[in-house]
Length: 442
Length: 192
Image 1 (spheres, rainbow over the protein chains, first blue to last red):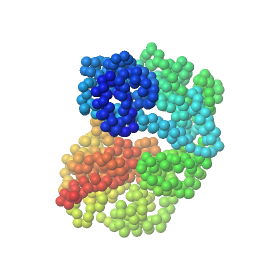
Image 2 (cartoon, rainbow over the protein chains, first blue to last red; image 1 turned 180 degrees about the vertical axis):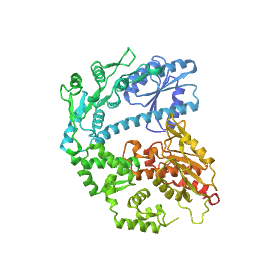
Image 3 (spheres, chains in turn red, purple; image 1 turned 120 degrees about the horizontal axis):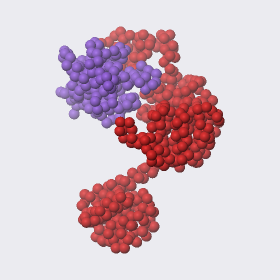
Image 4 (spheres, each protein chain N blue to C red; image 1 turned 45 degrees about the vertical axis):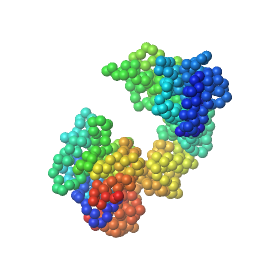
């Protein structure tokens, strides 16, 4: 068991304090004891404790009251109450008030062992969770927002500023420029970062969209109650992608929810309080008075507007973005990539990228799927049409190499691929394109 | 895995197109999967249409019914038969399956429907399809040789629930599965 767990045992019976104290010390924990609630509160003020074992019945302040004091000072404390069989009801009450577990006297060794294990494990998971949250908070924004072009530096300044505030944001950028990524980065920097980030797309329309946004008290055919996206985003961020694509009714619902901080599920009369930060996105900057977009909603959402440049206007970011996507693929696929060849980088830099960052990401992922690792070369990035044109000319040297390898391998495709140092699927595909037949072998 | 020259191999592996299957893919599988099992491979005739196993409500083909039909087909010797279909396969408790096999039995089936890039809205790439199909073929045939799912992420017998899982896992057997396979292929020469 972890030796860095600190346990405070509070019981007026010395034999309980001694026996439990010994048990947990043997497990490698740091243990202290208190004979009553007053002494326990003093020790609570002197040092931090991970786990508290509290007797319910004690003279003076009882265990239940002590528990309230402890949780007020240390809300994440792991509290285990100790009780006699006769007072299990009190133990249940203690658990309802935030205790983690209870144990009945006299103690069963198995029960103490389980109790110790779960208490320590819970504390370990709490710590791990805190560390992971910190790690995510530190890593995620840097991992997501890549690029050092003047346009992106400017956008990043706005993202930082938006992250430290809590107001609505409008993100404007072409498809694939990373509008949702930026919205997530703002969320990750905001005070709402541990609450949900909910995306509302505009693929749905009419009653389906309304149900998606507001939820259903009772669905058609007696379907169970369903919470809508606006309710799910409570406490967090609601990202509305394609604000101009929302119909008039949906815009009205959204405006009302933002202004009233409450929604009504479809088919319900009860209002449910919701508190989310709206971040909206549009392909182009909506003009005031633009038909199809309610001016009050635009006024509400466009408090701060962040403009994301298309990739063709920040070509210097292509290389770091591509490198980042490749690293991510490598981790995901457990393959070791060593980057791009200079020809591949030139191809990437010269492309127009009408689909922006997302298109670049897909191109890199596709190349990564085709390679087992190593360096991504120009031909790994070329779309099929280009490959076809190049190879249909029939490079005689390549055809000769493939035929030679197949002959040496007695027609065995796998062995021939090994000789050529290429993948079996690549070799077979090239044979098909070049019209090379397996003329020997089994 | 390569078997030593002179190792006794039982019968062949038959790659059986079910319905209209891509001939180049059938040829590719015929050329590649045999080596892992030390068996000859040949492409079978397109003798089976999947219509009888088609579920019009799910608009998918019930893979177990295909396996039953393959097992009932008369075959000389003791071949392993891998049915390959373009149809999307299912078994009742799952929304879909990439394939199904009878553990230690004769028959397996695999679908290429969800191995194609176009299923995910991307442009098809034959090389990607071939790689995925080879892994799925080895996986399902591995079951027919008695291999079960493997915890090793790199092993071709690792269970794949998504096409990303298929891409991530390797195209060969891990050392443990390879030993098990060798034992089943050649019990008298089992290692250890």
